[in-house]
Length: 114
Ligand code: AMP
Ligand code: ZN
Image (tube, rainbow, N blue to C red):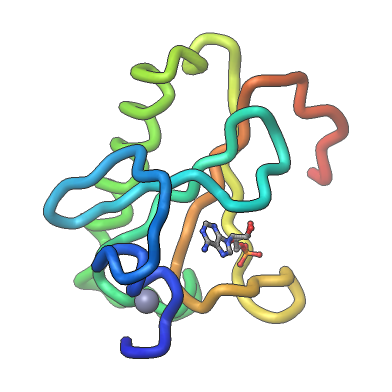
């Protein structure tokens, strides 16, 4: 997608603080961190949101969660605990229309919504 911010970050057209990359998954620091550690994990494939996933994306989503686990272990917050958030669509406040999972860590994350 030409006009997609995260596609441009994945291609290196917009700079980011890269945390992880493989053939299918890219992770980088959020520009406006909501916790001491705030990382975004995204598929390289442009998928608009969780609501637009196709059957063929099943393995990719599993891979994203294995990357989340790997990052948590490598950054040393796997045992302390962390939060993974996906905002899907308008009412959830999704601002970038490229599927992404927020990882929040590094502090007591406080009150839960659910
Ligand atoms: P969401 O509100 O769930 O769509 O999350 C979008 C996230 O992208 C927000 O947390 C933003 O801070 C983050 N963001 C926006 N632009 C950039 C950027 N250029 N580099 C890194 N993170 C960004
Ligand atoms: Zn995109």
